[in-house]
Image (cartoon, rainbow, N blue to C red; front, side, top):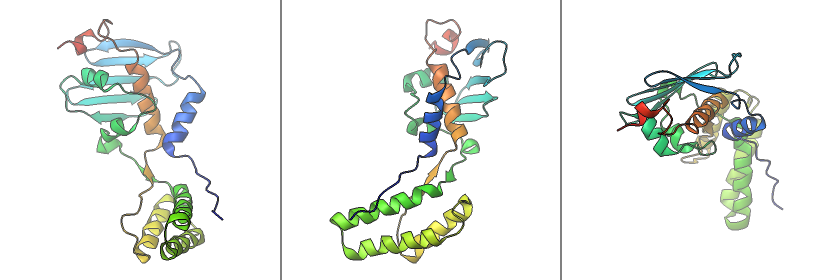
Length: 207
């Protein structure tokens, strides 16, 4: 009999679900404040206001929603971003451009047990007893660890378990925090309004 897998949601999934639940940018307006600088916010409020700054090689989102910097190899980053066609559900490529100052990925302990359960089920179906037994022992040791709610300690314990069982190249279970994904969603909203015919963006999109 296979063990039941209860897959927790990653930070990415939780962020996307939260953002789809309410339209926090619907009443925002974009105001050009200068070359490569736009203010985004709902008039008369201070809720989720942010600025988008484009300088050669960098895209910056900053404001009430926090700060995010993307490093891009382009002298006109708005043109690059328009060509990249950012989508809220596609995060892998943009996150690969995240500046190391903003890269705050953390260990997600709640991803470990479902992974081990999945491996146990797969080995029971298609693998061998020895490998299956190894995963079962790892799962027991993980469940015995008392501080899985402390990400740093949990991450060290996970790697120690893998080392004890000579499990090479284990998954890292690291993800960006929800705030980073939220700021990326704000950038996606901004880019949805960018066209070469709009005078607010014409200067930055011209060759």
